[in-house]
Length: 479
Figure (cartoon, rainbow, N blue to C red):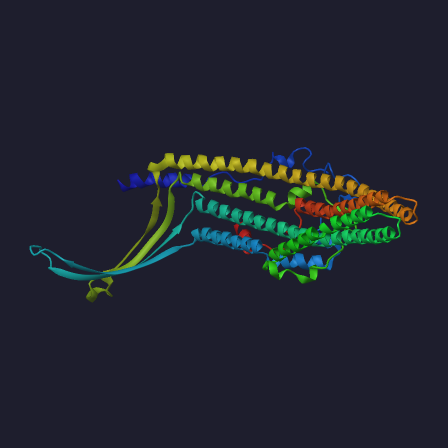
């Protein structure tokens, strides 16, 4: 009878010796291979772009040692990045747990039993016995359940690594942006203070002319109003600078009040000395950590589909035990020794509908992951094209505003000369200086925006993660 029961079960286990579930393969038909996804970017037109490969430490393209130092400090001390590192450590621990499923498991047991029989029993009315045993088992993993679990955990490690790398990309870009905001605020302060100084000169001249009978109190009040209006913009730029310094401190893992004082006086906008190296779509897809994370998520959930499929089949292990049992006086004798050895089979066969439902859930998750991968690729391409187009158009606008500023400067200079020599009216001078102030502010804001646009391109391109520490051994073990 025993052979008739065990034989078909063992035969079924051996029939499941092939690894359960599908082997993972990267998606062949996806947005990453679609026409237009891997070629040159549509918006990368003009001399400000190049097809060169984006360097790992793209911030060094600005040749600004202070910026280099800030980014490197942020990549070490940033709180979000430290949390991402901890998440990676957790994923690696889960992988080690999955790998331990292949190891022999052992257990030790021991006890004392006190028994008392009824008074009418033929045996002694009471006895004390002891037992001590050692058991061990080794999973055969005939259906590949453990193998798939290790594959899933290994892919999870790589997905979490990619998520950590994306945090690195974001932290590097945010640090560069905050630094550029400090410099831009000081740059705007300098420009507006120059405008205020010019308007103060006009106010002084207007007062002198009014005293000499060549001007009116109305002219003086209008000149004073122009000075007050321009001065009113200065606190806003000072607030922008301080807020950017607070942001910079946070990115560096410091309290806001502990912002880097050495950055406070930065007044020159970071400047690229070469065209932006943007590469192409294929390089972007390879580089972006979020795309890599999406792809590794597919791999992990494909392996989990195998884990679910393996539950259709019995789990077989080889087990054995040795031990001693009996009263204390006989505990060390040969008669107290016992052992067992043989295969152990576990199979929840009444729950096959539940297992089938779990397989369907896992399969649907893989399909969702495939769609998520396509969405990640398309979003990365959209972000990059948008950043490139914004920079290209804003560069054209900045050039036009520079020309407008230069023209306004010439006009204001001419109006000032005419007014001082009595050949021009005060209203024309005031209008010319107002136009100059507006043109200076617009041109300065446009130049500051260009730096932000450049950093947005670097962020969209996904640069800055591969300069970090190599991934720990966990993911490599899974492969």
